[in-house]
Length: 368
Image 1: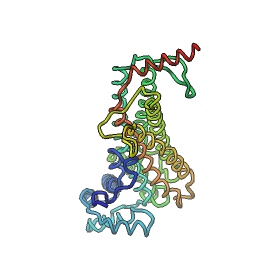
Image 2: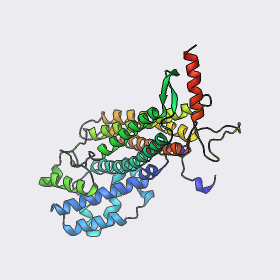
Image 3: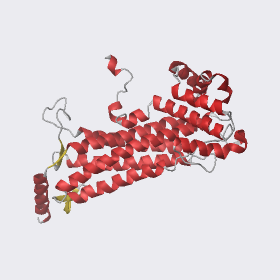
Image 4: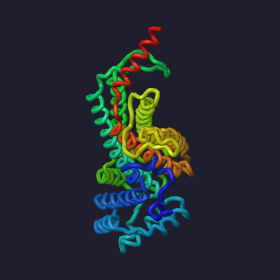
């Protein structure tokens, strides 16, 4: 296998595509955890919980730390969470300030807050992509929207409509999907509970530290720790579920309208959509891939909701851990689906003659 393919998953072209793939990478998660540790130290220093010079040293180290990834991987396997190994390396990089690293905190504070940071970043990138899709849909509506076409219900000819009616539905869905992610970004909170989720390890400064972290990370200030009350996770599942629903709907309609015996739309791109056995074919590969990625979303939503509702005692044994890969896969699949949809919409060609022909055929069928 060529060296350039090392580390690439066999199906990354479907579900690890676009900017969200990088924003949800292993490196992105590690950077988010370091960002949280830096925000924690800065907020604690501002509140007088740790010395100011210790806070400055920790923040500086979080920005420059060259992690030993092999050691971190081994520590994660031993401990079941990456934060412990990361904190060990961070403490080794700050000298006398080591005892103030991760002060009063627990792994869940860092992992949950890092998850919110990653989600905000991935969500913002996906909103940009959905806005691109919206612009392309508007362009199609402007150029060919008034074109009459036959409506179809339950897979059968119905009554005439217009392409504007079809693209209008797509537009409304894309606006709602982008809006769901924008609303979500404003709601995702810092997690700060300490070892048993009651903020007692922060003394009288818990609320002040949480607010300081939220300001530095661009997150919301929670009413209190949400260690086992996983409503932020449920909101993530819901918003990204909307993205998958909308992109899947548009992609499904694109694929259907590009079928050979419908032929009202087509994807046109050089050297794309070929067949290994039928040289004449030009498959709508981008729309198909958008649909394939969107179809991954409901499974990840279900896993995430199931895990979020299964937290025992003050920290869950397994349900919490199950959230991480499900959330990451959900965002990657949703982001890839949106990215593929933009690619498809850029390639779309409208066949107005075929639309007119299908209207005539439907009228003849209706009139007997």
